[in-house]
Length: 251
Image 1 (cartoon, rainbow, N blue to C red):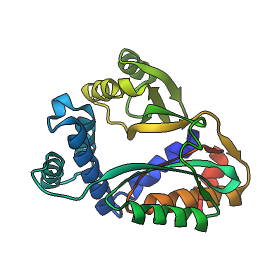
Image 2 (image 1 turned 120 degrees about the horizontal axis):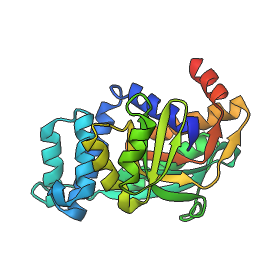
Image 3 (image 1 turned 45 degrees about the vertical axis):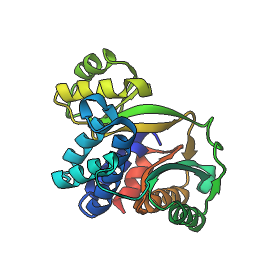
């Protein structure tokens, strides 16, 4: 998603962090295990692991949880096989959605995701159905109160940023996947903590939602998908105006 929709989603996630702390720790543990399995246990030589550990610290995840997740990745602690999967589908108004999951039970996860799509007026699509509708990019969302635009440009452009979008409340920085770690480290050196940082699916085009009822249905669907135990991220190509979003949020 883009524009105000992404910022509002980021704020909702932060506001609900305590209620969903158990799920967050579970997802972070699985992501740490996968990162170690694929790239080794030394964060200095494993950018993905370094980034996930930073997220774990920001979420106040206990150090013992991090240690156990690393040990599962190295095989020191036996564990189930964890898979990273992508599901693609469509929601109300034909909005395209990409759902990222990390799971130790593929059958359970696909059943839950398919059921949620169906209950919310959407449907799952085949693999690759949305391949040309989104681009895989590094994405950083940063509150405008944390850094000036000039300083942000100085920090990220030198490290491979492709685009900086200035919105009313936040900055959005986009980069190639290969430059994600360099920008993450540059922001850390500058003392700037992103409100959201991830390898995201950025829509090439968005569906403008002009009807409040449809907007509510889409937002409800995204929230229900995000509430599922194994869902890590939901990316969608809708756009809701600031005015409509504020009205919905105030209700």
